[in-house]
Image (cartoon, rainbow over all chains, first blue to last red; front, side, top):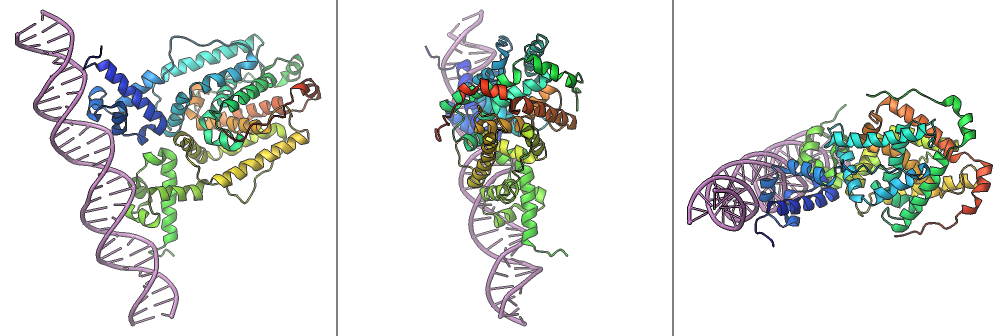
Length: 217
Length: 217
DNA sequence: GTAATGACTTGACGATTGGTAAGCTACGAC
DNA sequence: GTCGTAGCTTACCAATCGTCAAGTCATTAC
């Protein structure tokens, strides 16, 4: 039964509402009053549970938008489907992408919330790619970090920059038809990019570069 | 010599300051006071010249971030360098990308400022790509609109999502070394993707799809 | 000259912002 | 029971938000 006072429940009500608002209008675009209204709670109660608007924001990030550091989800299947798979994941998590987009727009040089966990997660994925290269499942003439960045770019951009996707393709990024077609497109791109071809391997052996990008600016 | 009252000059001062602030902190993150301080002008004077904050924003978009509809810049050279060339352009226009990122984050479904000019510009580029397909300079098994979107994705994403680029590559998107390496990477990707190979052409002829994406959601 | 225009200043406006202080009251431990 | 803790409310706050109104003054057309 519902207790009249249940801090956990109200905290969840607040963070849910906050996540919804932050994703849609960004930190500066949302007022505590907006969140309070949506959570059906007084704004002072928000301040009571989370010390400030900033505190609420950090908590929301922690709860809703930090990658679950436990389950690794590192199931990497066929290398030619890396792109398409990643896009399918991204398409199912539009809110997260929106969050990342706000972060990208507003965060010039600021320290990232949850930096360490994210760094770890990303490095793991990069490591998996490097392993595939070592096994000959991915071309070796491409830096695995850049492959990773390219995967994220192709999987994320159409959803993040929905206005561009609409201008270019005439369809919304959330349109099911578009997502199906883009998925197919990425599969084909993945084949062209990542299929292991012995002939190419030999032909491009001379441009194999082992110079790895420096670690810092 | 400087006249004491020169509307054109002060308007420029204001729009310059506004562009700077809007790009860095977004519409909601900036107050008229901020802009006024940077332009060294009273905020009431801003309202005098542009009717409102909204009006100022639209004017700034018009002046600073609308593609110059005159010069076409449609110089498309070697198809395998489409990606790399586009990235070089983007890298030189970081402010514009930042502007696009704010737009992407905040503009869910809103009508775009300067929609028509942008639509025209983008369609022209798409047309150029289709022409290259017809001439056999680009693979025909990829929809030219998706090629266009992929080009924009790979050219824009690393700069727009600077925080991700840093996590993945360890370098800032504005780092010259990164830009050089990413440019080289895109050149190689362009070769793998867009080089015309007769053998593939024959092999993949059966999946040639003429079903074009529908025009609307 | 002088009058009109419009660039610019001053001073305030009501609303809303994030945040504080103090008190009330439901709950759980005992 | 009753008592302390903590969830929650009420009543404020100073600051800042975008905007308006009225006036000053430089410039220009005549």
